Amino acid sequence: MLNLRNMDSLKKWTIIGIIIGIVVGFVSIAIYYGIILVQDLFMSDFVGYNLPLPVGEGGSLAYTFFVQNYWLLPVSIFVGALISGVIVYKFAPETEGHGSDAVINAYHNEGGNIRRRVPLVKLLTAALTIGSGGSAGREGPTAQVAAGIGNIISKYLDISKSDRRNMTAIAMGAGIGAIFRAPFGGALLSAEILYRRDMETEVIFPSIIASVIGYTILGAFAGYSPIFEINSSILNYVFTPYILPFLVVVGIFTGAFARFYIKMFYFVREKFRDLKVKNYMKPAIGAIGTGAIVLAFPEVAGIGYGWMQLMMSGDFNAFVNTFGMPLVLFFLVLAIMKMVAASASVASGGSGGVFAPGMFAGSSIGVCIALLFATFFPELMPISLVGAFAVIGMLSFFGAAGKVPIAVTVMVIEMTGTIALLPAAMFSIAIALIVSGKDSIYRAQVATRLDSPAHISEYYSPLMKKVKVNRVITRNMALKPDARPGFAEEFMKTNDMASAPIVDGRGRLLGAAYLEDVVRMSENNEHGKVVSVLKRIKHVPMDSTADAAWKAMVRNKATWCAVADHNRYLGIVRMSSVFRKYSRD
Image (tube, rainbow, N blue to C red; front, side, top):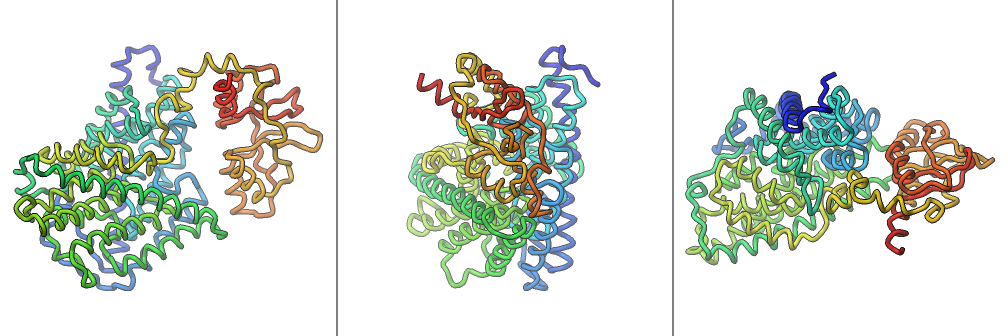
């Protein structure tokens, strides 16, 4: 075991950054080529649809749309989603969805811990979902796979629990930086994506090292060119004050649609969670919706970078069928269809990211607004700037949706290879952030470090030593050993708990059931009892302080702690109750 605990901080994090970077580099290669392999099997060979690619990934601006077996598009998407769903809910249910949120949650609430099986399951299911034509991005899966590997490595290093938690964030940022060929942006993302209004500054330095090494390794196989090629009108763009009113409009529209994207995504997710079918079938049902949209708008299939490249180049001849709509309206509709398709693919439980769909939608909105202005103000907005507004829209949309304006600004600059649009993009994203409101596509984000359970001991330790357990106990909050999984799942959701104590008929505390295990049991055996998934937990006596209860919560990986007197169950203490009590006092 490498002894890093007593090493100088700079040396320690340099070594950790190098280790993570090497691992993340090869993880990124696996995801990058895994998606290409599945895409070749499903989309190219089965459907006969060669998706456009960005120039930096072997594509060309001279693209002609053609699908040999058009009606097999939805079949491909359905089959990929079905296989992915079976693997996800059989082996690692926490890999459903877009991945990044699971990593953020692990950082704040799980000490950075991610199960060992997660990286492999996420790698396979993301390749199946995206490669078969599902409307999703690769950044979320890359984040979860890289973070999972980072967590495994941390177990073999002599470092503190907080350092292990930080390694999870570092690996996540490095993975995204490598796969996007945006190492500096990825490093900043690892610090910014955890919060809505704060940054985890101590992870930036090792993230830079890890991102650069990961990018170097992936680039040796996939190339070092920026993903998107930018035309001369963008490269030679000079910022002028008259463009500001146009940027305000872009910011307003991208911010408003980012807000719509967030609300729709989580509305769809809740509907699928309430759907009374086997969980593994839900991604396939979502794929039916995605497939229906793809039949009308084949541009929304897959990641979509090739179509974004064509938007940036201003070449709209390749876009398939505008249904007689003017291009201004078509690109607005296309943005909405991409958001709907991404929600159907990912919010249903499919495995893929939400970053790329957001960038696609933002590019489409940027093109829509630029074409509108070019029609009415041709002298102020020449048609040659349409590509520039595609880039600005891309940046504004996801910077607002993910509450990551700084990281996304840098990433887009690295992905396009130019800083010419930097002042315009910064102004537009500021407007978009205001309009988008407080919601984020990453629901696991917290507002600031002060709100993170990961930092609770730094800010609230004096507080919790003053609050006694007997002042904040909640009684009559438990499951019986013979409770059915359906009842247990509903009990936890109603009480906003990810686990619940199990108490027998004599009032003895037996342990706890965790929601993840209950859901899995429900899938495999609907007539089981929660006692079959019981886990032992640490409890505290009635005369304890909230500080002792919090330490038990950390050990139990829960937001509550059982209170018991020699195993005689008395109730639970919830962290939210502690905070409310302190505020009243």
